[in-house]
Length: 253
Ligand code: ZN
Ligand code: MN
Image (cartoon, rainbow, N blue to C red; front, side, top):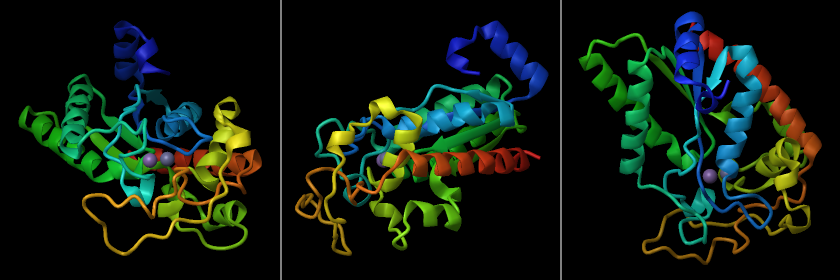
């Protein structure tokens, strides 16, 4: 189900014969605290897509592992070593090129499964640009869904993740949700002895240019990750896989 591991002959036959859903995971190479790997935002949607694939007739494209520039209030910002990003304009054009190629080769159902919130508006620009170009060439039968993987997490799952009260999703960077999901999906990549327990970041209502790094916790996590557990991660992942199995086929119905 990984396109990168198929031959072109196998891939072409699969497109023609089964009209699959192609999923592009859209991640980032971005600091995720002292305890999670730089590619966390790519690893999570890639693993979710692979696990969902049998239930959605899915084929998984290679992830976009460089993301749109990290914002201080949602990912810590660009000054962290290892946070390696693209300008939004570059990103939208790269995505557009890839979406167009899939469309020209006969992909009719494409899901962009986003793992990095800063990507979202540039994903939209890339998708829309690609569809305009394809339409100009007479290709009108491709439909694209953009989905942030976390967006369907229900209130009951949030109650498991955050039993002490409501969450500020913007500040969940490298915190309870991502850490729990990684503990479940990729336990060997989580440095359990380095899980940070700093208080939640407090930002002013404006953004400062040039960057004022003082409100950004130096550990990189924007909230404490101490309450993360692999069991919480399992609850999140199981519910997301059920959601995807319903949402994605109905989006293409
Ligand atoms: Zn992340
Ligand atoms: Mn991110």
